[in-house]
Image (cartoon, rainbow over all chains, first blue to last red; front, side, top):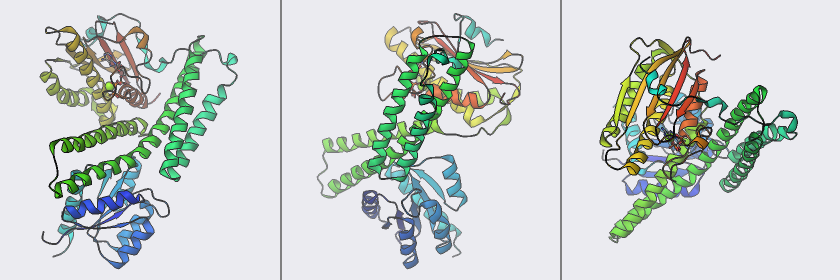
Amino acid sequence: MSEPIRVLIVDDEERFRSTLVKLLASRGMTAAAAGSGEEALEVLAREPFDVILLDVRMPGMGGMKALPRIKELRPEAEVLALTGHASVDIASEMIAKGAADYLLKPCPLDELLDGIRAAFDRGRARKPQ
Amino acid sequence: MSGNSSTSRKTPDPVPASGTSPPLGDKRAVPGLALYTVLVPVLAGAAVLTAAACAPAMGVFLAVLTLALTAWSARRLAGLAGRAEGERCLLTAKLMQSQKLAAVGELSSGIAHEINNPLAIISQEAELCGALVEAKGAMDPELADCLAEIARQVARGRDITRRLLDFSRKMEPVTQLESLDRAVEDMVVLVEKEARLRNVNVIRRYDPDAPRLLIDVPLLRQAVINLLTNALDALEEKDQAGGEEAHGTIVVSTWRSGPGEAAITVADDGPGVARENLARVFHPFFTTKPPGKGTGLGLSITHNIVERMGGRMEVVSEPGQGAAFTIHLPLKGETP
Ligand SMILES: Nc1ncnc2c1ncn2[C@@H]1O[C@H](COP(=O)(O)OP(=O)(O)OP(=O)(O)O)[C@@H](O)[C@H]1O
Ligand SMILES: [Mg+2]
């Protein structure tokens, strides 16, 4: 567990991204941010991440569209949908498309950290050592 | 049959929930009806859709605008509802009620979504603020209390948006053949712990030969828990008002309410529902509880769920003697 967990935050709210980057960093994770699905794909093409927090609705390419491409590009990354838009339909569709879990905003930091760690552990367990 | 006793001690004239809107004025006497039944819901829907696509600030503005629009429309409808009566008018009232519910549902989820994002930012800023102050070694109890209060208020806001989303959720019931007792008992167990703490007695009167019904268990649980928490709340009021011997009893029964029907009744001996409120308790946002305590959505969620399962609701209450809420479900479980 010496390697820090690498988290990519994909969200169109600038302040949400920047503060969450700082918060995750303060909890020993490495975090980067992207403001849209397109931007996320660019970042992911350059470097790998363990866990991706993905908003569903964003101007430009939203999470629903970005998810399959992210999975194609980085199949080993675990995706957590994190959104203010709660609906059973959206949640089940995101999970069907490969998201590991679905978290609803506002999500208390501790719950979010638990979610990220759980996703990270699951991802590591799947990977052949 | 044993369950019947819980309602029979109450006075007659139950108010059917689907007729909760007072009969509406004669259609001919209401020329601008299309305004409320078509234009307002369409506008509300359009605003929600636009809000989803544009900047948050614009979204909030639209949400407020839509809120004002539907509130105005609802008020006008309520005004119209005050007048005449008759079979056909009752039918109109039912239609209005469900259209109003649909519009309010759409509006609610739009608002909930728009509010969740700022709530998320507020909660993160408070977290970061705490972490920064902590790192400087400058945290003091008062500041810590302020930050904790922000977190509590965010949680409160979140509870409200969750409830709004529950309310507006358009889930198709997924039914399975199950006995009513099973779904009811799970929730009774849940509430019983809290009840014991408050010295409230929970009595079960389950029909020993309860038939199995086609029900959606998670949805029905949600419907039942709302009735149970209301009963607990009602008894708390009584506790505060009545001094020491006022502890209260909740009777939960399952019984056959008719040839083709099974029913669940949750009755309490709390303060009951005031006469003038009987017709309104199922309306969304109707609450007599203090701010932060009730959203007024519990019973309308229950009502929605029951209706979706093809059932109906009924309330019997004599002020000062308690209230009994009954869910009637068709034995076939098929929507009529
Ligand atoms: N068992 C009861 N006894 C007396 N009054 C009741 C009872 N159940 C409901 N009511 C009345 O009906 C109102 C609406 O109930 P409802 O469950 O819809 O909302 P709420 O309990 O006020 O808020 P919420 O359920 O959203 O927390 C209550 O505020 C209360 O006045
Ligand atoms: Mg309630």
